[in-house]
Length: 418
Image 1 (cartoon, rainbow, N blue to C red):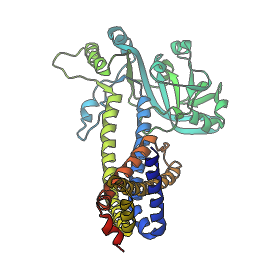
Image 2: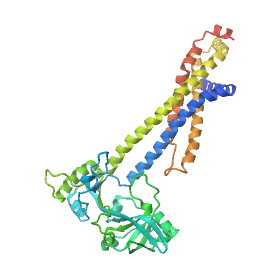
Image 3: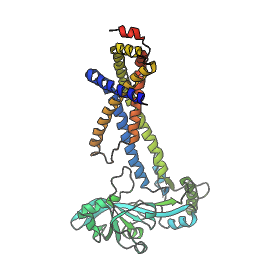
Image 4: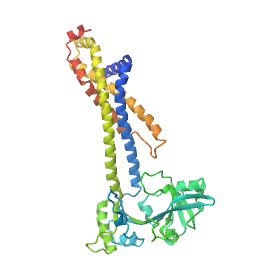
């Protein structure tokens, strides 16, 4: 064990000595390694952070939840919008039928929304979201209240003109969001009393629910303000599966329930869409980020190849410069594997130093991007481990030929060399 530690320490010192003695040559050679590691870590960190943000946004739609709508959410280049636009929109009365007929559904909720201008005294916010929901909305969605309270069962039943407001919307209208509780806002000519303020959620990268800039009402209150049968609202039904029920099984059951509800004949096409947002998002995300990762690895691979040739060149020169030292070591009893190990470790250390340079550049990039991106960029430990593993492998590959030459030297001829 002590012998191995001694070899490691000596190899590390020799690597630093090589950098000190040949600053320009080493710097130019390690630049390729540093840039390659920079590409790998930055691309992986950015993609990993973006993927985590998108996955969190998908979870916002509800875990294992199916959206019943007239529109198919899985868009494509040949999206037949003319087919979907004539479909009937989901109705509030259909919720009870689904609850009665479905054995796999855990919660069923009706959701309708529109956008409008919201006023408080002399302040106005344009294009805020107004969400009309039924009682089981919070059983499917997570709506945390920062101040005040959520809607009561009585307020849902009676359709009282009350609602909860998004954090940023409350901030724009009242300055301090906490002041919004028990105040009244105006929109569409109606006055709504605020019972609570939703916790700040942050911006979503997907077109999900913007809880920061909305007001949530009971559906009955929403229907008393807006024409729910008109074209200016966006209704759909959310169905959450029971525990351990896969979404595919729920989709199959809901298809039969909806066809029965809509009284469709066996040969008639479905006039509704069953959207599994989680499955759509996962497949799309996996494909997209897989392509991005491949591009990042391709760019990094070219840089690493250049860096590998640079490190190999350093090691060839190093072997030539230390030929007499190698001969002396072998004359004193050093074995081939010891010489080989020393030069391989030295090559690996050189690449690790290049990797540290690349990691420092990524850290600087992270500080810059975190102030610009709508999500935090984080360098995960597994990404750093991957980068340093690449450095070690690259160092060994770069140094294997020079190290083999050093290990096979004849001690007498090596000592005589100048």
